[in-house]
Length: 62
Image 1 (spheres, helix red, strand yellow):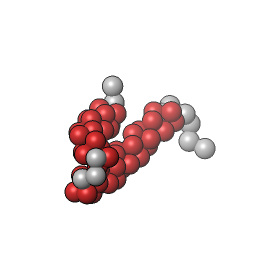
Image 2: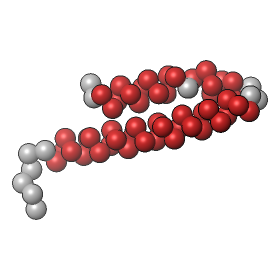
Image 3: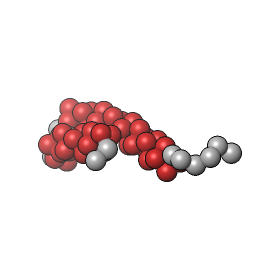
Image 4: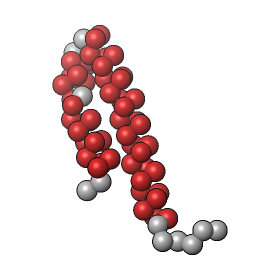
């Protein structure tokens, strides 16, 4: 599997407890979830770029 995909899965799993705490009303947990979501967004963007590179690998430059 892709290293970026593994990082994405780990990041989502790592914030699971904070999401539950945020749902229960813990305001500090909401801040941690927001930060984690920003990190997840960046990892997802890296994964997207990686997949585009794999798609375009081997194609002649236009």
